[in-house]
Length: 86
Image (cartoon, rainbow, N blue to C red; front, side, top):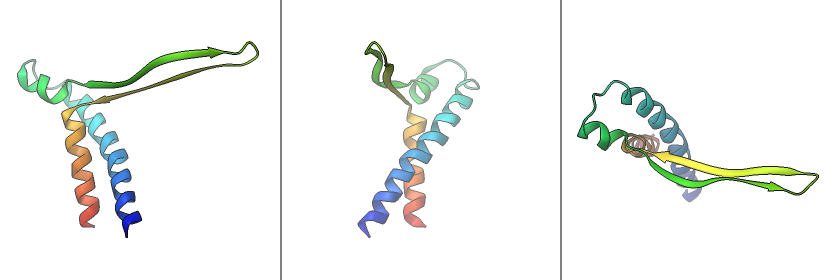
């Protein structure tokens, strides 16, 4: 039973994050400038910048960045709640 709940949480984070980010991008162009737009659509950037590792014969780049908005967080919790109720 615990695996099912963990699966719902992970699925909710991924699906809610994708839907919330897409909706946040779409709605941020519609809202006029002001405090409401800043509250809902200002992103918190989490991660680290790209770092290149060059070994002479092999090189690769590592980097990770996540932008979190209030809309994204709302949708993550909404999807987790809906998955829990199913």
